[in-house]
Amino acid sequence: MNNEIAIEEIRENTFFWKFYLCWFRGFDDKEEINIDEAVEVIETNEIDFYNWERLFFNHESIDENPRYITANLTDNLNFAVEFQEYEINFFLNDIYIGNLGGHFEAWFFTCDELLAFEKHPIFFLLLLPMTGIQENQKSFLKPIITKHLESIPKFESHSEYIANCILNGLIMESQFQETDGIGLTNNENHSVRNVIKYPRYLEDVKELNNILQSLK
Image 1 (cartoon, rainbow, N blue to C red):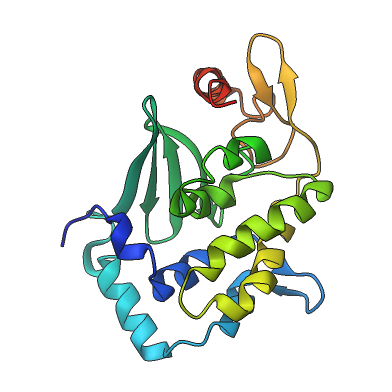
Image 2: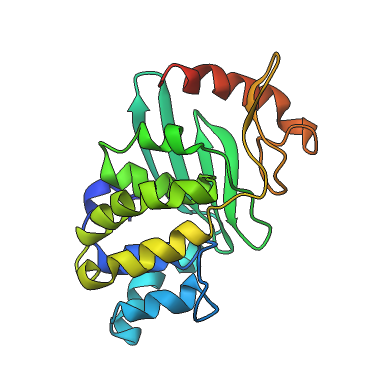
């Protein structure tokens, strides 16, 4: 099996998106359940789902041969999503920007930066968990996320509910701000863009800020 996952393999793949969403930090605030439980509204055969996951992600050799998705966002910006056994890692131009897992790091993209990729729905959904928003941005993003989820088989009647769960996990306690000589940063725990707490990421953030600035 080719380790690189083609976009066409996941575009309308119900199993993939259900699997992927289970890693998000989203939650149902009314029922008080995490998104990995919330997505059970998407009914799939558990045995088929389990067997698909093990085969699709090379579970027999995932440590040595993790599968990944990569694509160009612009002429000078590409991304990669790498599926390890216990985490999913995210990269821009081969620079690490965060992960989903037990020791997650997220809240990298602003809402505006994410929207720059909205014309590519698959890229938009893949990068969504690396985004940080404010409470007042939920109502704006919700119909966009809902629209993209509706294109996935079996998600149609549950897309608004799942969008709500996703958005709950994107809200930041702090805000992004412009920092002289660096560009956009934040003060959020578990964020690569918090260069005060995580100074090891400073040069990477400066480099990516210069590129992301050109998207506006």
